[in-house]
Length: 155
Image: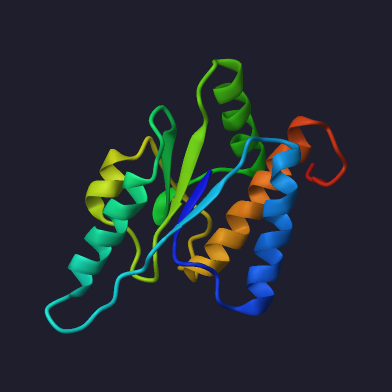
């Protein structure tokens, strides 16, 4: 499951996200949820926006799922590590994982502290739409790795 702030607006990125997200159900039970972005202005400052968006992300996580927050301050996993993690969840009868992608201002410290894992997709700061594309591609790649399909050509 991927839960993100806002829907992708850039047509090219939105099409690429849709393409990869359409492939994921061949390998895993998969769902996307988009929460409404908050707006800055008036009495609403950056911290308030981040807290509200982070709270909305967490509220949408079904019971029993592991929480993975995507954040540039997180740990890096390889594609193979992500695939093994997802395989371990299935082998041990876990319900699965929810990957949370914050909005342009990121996620709150409290959300990162609540997470089972905080992962970084890159040491670069990425636009949240690009993060969603990378997550979708990596979930698809993980599925192909676990099935031994030729998409993943590492090593």
